[in-house]
Length: 144
Image (cartoon, rainbow, N blue to C red; front, side, top):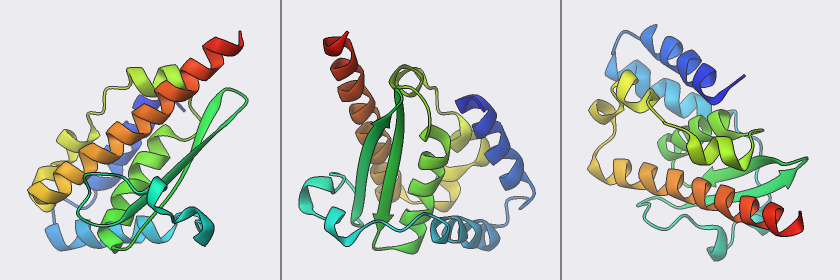
């Protein structure tokens, strides 16, 4: 699936919640519970996303020119939010991640159920994922 197809799928899922604040937050937390476990050894300071109020650890690896992310957080809602980004970006090339226009947040009305601090943290997670993509792209270009 393309990044936009995944975003459209997320928009559809959230539309089923009909804007119910409580159900939406519960759903986001549920998504976070489905994230694969991150090794304790990866929960180190150098993997912490700067700019998040909660602790968010994020790692990335490149396999067959596609990026795969792992993440965890010390809060359930933040873990759910990062899980949405992982779902969108995992298994895509550095270029498609860098070129991605993330519109799902606006379409699901995310600003209504996450505050300013979390919005800033969410933007920091996106920025960190795009920085990983840029680093991998550069590394790939140097090799070729």
